Image (tube, rainbow, N blue to C red):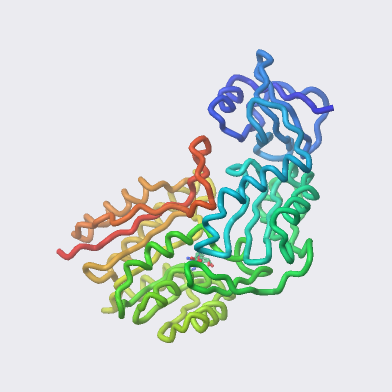
Length: 394
Ligand code: SAH
């Protein structure tokens, strides 16, 4: 028997605006005892059916919605249908890349599930107790629809902890090599499926790597800050940059950047394993100038309380970067935290421009690539945004 959850006014209003996350204090009554991961039907205080979800009393987000205003049975057919819709929607992206996100959690109607395709292999994250219950269906659906040679699980530690689940990191189907080569817009990358960050590669930046690289002129001096395995810098090299400097604090990325440079026939580059904040302080004391600088930091603000410090961090990064940018040069700055908005990025840039006495031009507004969908009813689904800024000559 599927249990009933009656929401209070605020929870009901949330569902009416198609918000799929219900918090503990938005629940009025639960009929009977529920265990984490149980499927529940949601009702308004007046008894109107609001949808189907799964519940986790241990998690901050108590209920995640699977379907609005109807009863669904999340069985094999349900999961297959959702995966297949998510895949069909993305088929055209395969023309540009053989590595794409196939399932993006709530945005594909499968809350708690991430599926990334890297050529013949899949890397998945099962991040909630509710999705954990559907694990067998998910694997079965992925095998039937995508026919991969292997599936690796790279579930996210932090999310699973919040749900009271153990961390998983293992091959769960077929065979998966340690690393593979992917082709994105004719730029090739090694991806470490077992040890790479996230599920292996930052797929959400694909469109931005492409857009930014279109501004490269032969011989440009490029600085790729928070480079990870070199995404932006490698694209720049393929487009003819003269020299590329990669900076990242992680000890794992240097061998990957070296391999990626070799793979794409890039000869002139330097890699610094360093804190970007320190690196920028150092370089700003020299005469060195760059034609393109990319700032792609990790999420400095995981919640709204951290946003203030994050803004201060951004201000420093943008201001130092603009100092070492040649006149006429370009800065691409990104925030992958929902709590730092596009407007915040603009405000920081404007403040900095006053100090530097430079008029800055917004050349482009940048967003996550479309295999990471932005649903209007889920504001947090627009998490990655960026600005391409030109430092005009004074
Ligand atoms: N631009 C990359 C993705 C960047 S992810 C791409 O297109 O693939 C953010 C990176 O910042 C991670 O690789 C992480 O190791 C690095 N990082 C985090 N804090 C840092 C710091 N203070 N200094 C330098 N690198 C840092």
